[in-house]
Every structure is written in structure tokens, then in C-alpha cells.
Image (cartoon, rainbow, N blue to C red; front, side, top):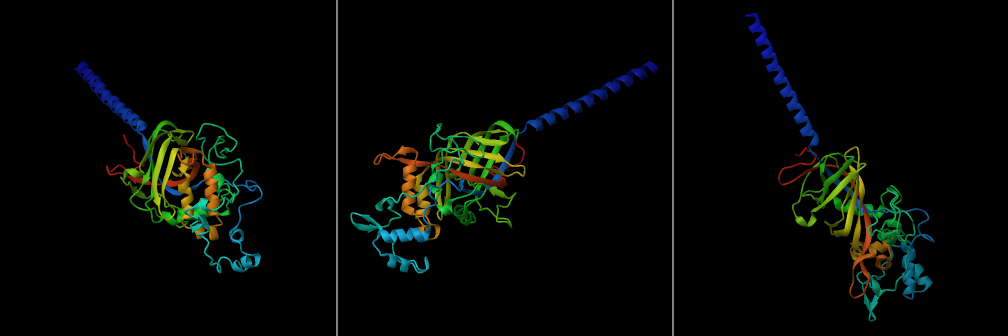
Length: 378
């Protein structure tokens, strides 16, 4: 009888032991399953403007003419005497009413110089001669006009748009400081246009992951600002399914920096500033921040006419209030254009290398299938 009891006890012990081992094994399997599940991160683009890195010595002989001097030069070119010019500019710009947007000439007839910038002689505005600039080595070469990126140390950086803009006072931006006018334009449009959102999927490790996907697209609703006029964190945005603004590209994360493959970027903007953004041969670099935000650069080749028209459409305001010689800006962009395709009539490049700054805050991104960024996906 005692032997039976002992034998039964051992059997029960083995039974409970097998149950315990099974539970432990299931727990380990569940933990392993959780560990290999990929993370999805969502972001709201808070700032998006041309990436500028201006220094005190990057414009030989100083900056381009400020508005009063620019107008004085134009009036002198139109044959006015010094006294007439002085009278017109006595309380500039308040008393300046002279019509001079139609100062261009085609076949001897006056035309709008903003819509026809080559109808006036090239004023040869100054361009930036600095050595530091944000962006990427887009063409795989290292030329005499290329920059060194101050954040990565990469040389051969192509950003000729920054050279064209770099000596206009209102387009300049000191290191770490948002350019004054470029920033105000984005600020004026982002409250009304649909928000731009980023989603990074397939993230197994935020520090190093060779295989992730980045989505940059528009939302159905606009962004909301916080008390500091920055994008409010942790809001939820619904993805606009319109395929025109859906940009998907493979990327990789190394040492906490996400960089994408090369792709063609298109995004609908706002007509007040720029109706659409087009980049050929573009790529994105994003540094994932500890607070869940991101900071980085998108670079590529942009039609230089698109960049010019963002200022030309405001006409006299750009020249009188922003000190931008519009025909001069056009000529500078055209001369510095370094990307194809080639215009068949002129034989000139039609796109210019450019970089835009991306600043983003943490957000939740909702798709039509109900999936939300920052939730764990299988």
C-alpha cells in the first residue's frame, strides 16, 4: 500500500512538473514572439522649408541689395534723374506708387518682368560661396561648387538652390536657426492645408535596422499648434488615400539615423506658397529623437521654375518687402541648375539640386484598415 502511495505521488509530481514546464515554454514562446514583432512610428511634419546654412563670410562683398537700393537701381535704369529717384523713395515703400512690374521688354513692348524674367537684363545677383550646406551627394561626384554637410561631414553635397538663395537677406538662415521668411511662409500655410505625416514601419531596432519602410503623405485634417506655435504632439491623423501624395520608399536605420533609398517625391502643397513639391532622385535622412520626434533633410532635384514662382507670384511684394530681385533670382537659378531633363530648345538643365529641412513631432497615423502607428504589428 505504501509503495502504491509513493508511486502515485511520484506520478502526480511528474504530472505537475510537466504542466509547469509547458507553461514556462509557452511563456518563453510568447516573449520571443513579442520580441520579434516590428514597431511602427508616426510623425507630424512640424516644419518644412529650404535648408540654409548661412555664415558671415559666404557672400563676397556683402549681401544682395536691400529693397530701397534695389528700387533705386531699377529707377536709374529707367532713366530717372537722381533727384527724381530720391523723391520717389523719400518714404519707401509707403509713398512708392510707380508701376514697374511691367519693366520688361519684348519686341519693344512692356511686359510683366516677374512672369517674363528674361525680358530684363541679367543683374547678376550675388550667390553664396560658402563651403557648408545641408543635403546629399546626389550625383556621386565631388565638384568645386559642392558643399560639405555640417551635420554628417559628407562631402560632394549638391544644393545649388541654397547658393542661389544664400545672399538674399530674407532667405538666409544661421546654423540651427530657421530662415526668417522661409519659415513664415510655411507657418502661414500649415494651419489651412492638410497636415503632412510620416510613418515608419517594420522597425525591429530604433538604432540599427537594415529593412524599414517610410511613408510620407498627407492627412485628411490640418495640424494643430501648441502654445509655443509648434506642432501639437500625439495627435491622431487619418491618411488621405489620394495616391498623388503617397510616397513610399525603403530605408535603413544605422546608429539611430534613418536614410531612404532614392525615389521621386511628390507632395501637394498650398497655392499661397507652393502648390506642389516635386523632387527627382530624392532621398530622406531622419534622426529619430528620444522624445519620439524626428529631425532631418530631404534632398533632390527640383524644377527651378517651381522654386522661382513661389516668390514671383507675389510680385512687387517680394521685391519691396523681401528684398528679392526677382529676375535676378530667376537668372541665378537658371545658371546654377544642375539636373535634368535638358530643355530641348535652350539646351539648359531644368532642375536644380535642393534640400529642405524636416522637423517632426510624434503622432498617431490611422489608415483606412484601422491600423494605427505606434501600435505593435505582427
